Amino acid sequence: TYVVTDACIRCKYMDCVEVCPVDCFYEGENMLVINPNECIDCGVCEPECPAEAILPDTESGLEKWLEVNSKFSAEWPNITVKKDSPADADEWKGVEGKYENHFS
Ligand code: SF4
Ligand code: F3S
Image (cartoon, rainbow, N blue to C red):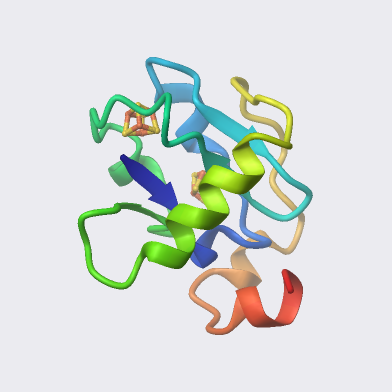
């Protein structure tokens, strides 16, 4: 599966939802997540994200993000259409420590 990582937090560009063939993105207040049970591993969302927030879970160190994606995709609503990104999205692009500061 692919997973959304902390680079999405407060950027939330939502280009990813437009390309997913199985509509498996779910929307939280500050970020999106992928439902790992629904993702078919096609990979088309990865290059679409301007924040480079989407990665295959085969990359090392992503266990925490797989857990976050699993947990919240079961709680948050499905999103299939891109909306307006946060006004300050570009200011949060590439900022480190976003999970620690805004999500826990
Ligand atoms: Fe959707 Fe494909 Fe991305 Fe999985 S890898 S979330 S199926 S676009
Ligand atoms: Fe987030 Fe990138 Fe999608 S910033 S909302 S994963 S396009």
